[in-house]
Image (cartoon, rainbow, N blue to C red; front, top):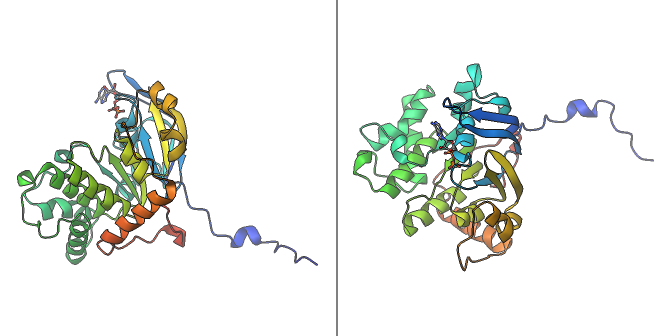
Amino acid sequence: MNPRPHPNLQEVRADPLPAAVKAEGLRFSYPDGTEVLRGIDLTIEQGESVAVIGPNGAGKSTLLLHLNGILIGTGNLRVLGLEPRGKDLRTIRSKVGIVFQDPEDQLFLTSVSRDVAFGPNNMGLDAGEVARRVKEALAAVGMAGSEDRAAHHLSFGEKKRIATATVLAMRPEVLVLDEPSANLDPKARRRLIDILLALPVTKIVATHDLPVAYELCDRVLILDRGTIVADGPVETVLFDEDLLAAHDLQLPYAFEKLPARSRRARGAASAAAVSGALPARATPGGQSPTG
Ligand code: ADP
């Protein structure tokens, strides 16, 4: 005889994790009246790595800026189960880190260590913990030893890595990256991709660099004129030439189509190479993220 389910089974199950992002009918217009987001419906689960691609002006940056309440639209938006506004804004900003396209927007203090310590200090952590976070974040981006340097003396690639460290020092649960590879030379680009591959957090990446989307992400959204026009596994979306062309997108000529297995193996190798630099953040519910 089959055992009967316990009548209180529902009650003993752990609560499901809130989605990293859940948007319903999200709309946004800039004060000059430009309507940029025209009803975004989107769910991103924790642990996913999602690329947001689309032509210039599609609304990618605008969408990302909603995720920690820098911009606030209409409709429903929950990030890690919280509304990114009002009383929850502080919590959201400690859990959702945005690396802006231009590192100059993120670095404004007199030394690298001060820039990286800024977020942890704002979180009210004690000095010892702040120092640990700074060390750990700089090691994670391969910039240990640069604590006393002035950001304006660094190369663009180094600035980008420090900007990433300023966010990692907060140990975000959701890492949001706006054009992470823009303006990087091939070596700096490779290095940043390897750093990002090694980070076991939810990643949302807006990029024009489709090979970066292919390497970093499992899922791709195409945003065009403020709506999501495609959403699917990276292999499906990025190899649909007609779909890409319809939205002014194209994979580079002679793009190397690594099968998913090789792509993952490459990611794992990169992760192993960088591992130890940044302790994995325990994810709520003890789930193993896939990113
Ligand atoms: P993407 O990141 O996809 O290139 P953006 O989100 O940067 O797109 O921009 C979407 C649209 O919003 C563009 O038409 C852009 O000109 C406009 N826009 C961006 N920032 C502002 C602003 N501060 N004020 C008015 N319009 C803006």
